[in-house]
Image (cartoon, rainbow, N blue to C red; front, side, top):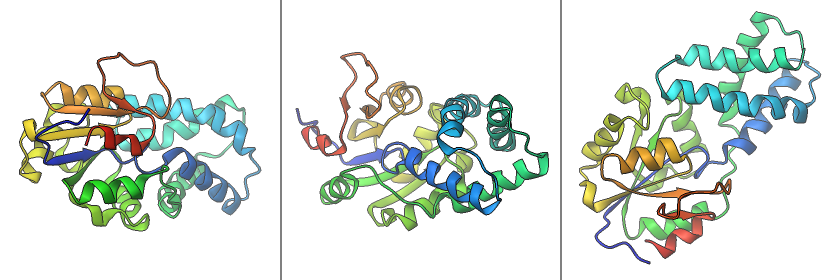
Length: 229
């Protein structure tokens, strides 16, 4: 069913347009090779991915800072795997990860097609919790920056999704009204509920096939957004 009166579409970036999991795995392979670390990438990711998820939750909730996130997630993963890595190397890996992450730019299936479709009908925007120094590189290097009128980063605002301030800031910068706007993202708490809490309509990109409430608008492929927009 089409949603009427929409003029502005706000997107999350990581895990919604930009395939974070795939690009992150390729980045770890690269930096382990660069630093001559013989670590099984599959075993590492099995441990690291859920740890990273929890660290990002703490980061969203303002319970830890960026430095703690970047170091802690690696240190915890190596400890669980019982791999001895010097503190100085963990810091170097953390820096190398940020350096090389946006050199890999796999997008979710249908990303370019849906952006081209929406670009002709709406003003498009980004709201992201990702690190400022990395997110612009992702947009530029994946050649999707051209679609977006505004880009709101949590570091610009001083708070992260789902905090209402970041949504209100993004709406203000975009000169958009809540009733004429919609948010699209993968994270139920940060993107969807965060938007709904201020009265902003939202669609969950449920590529991870979570069991969501039937009241939540959702798609599991980006091209399915055409059903709504």
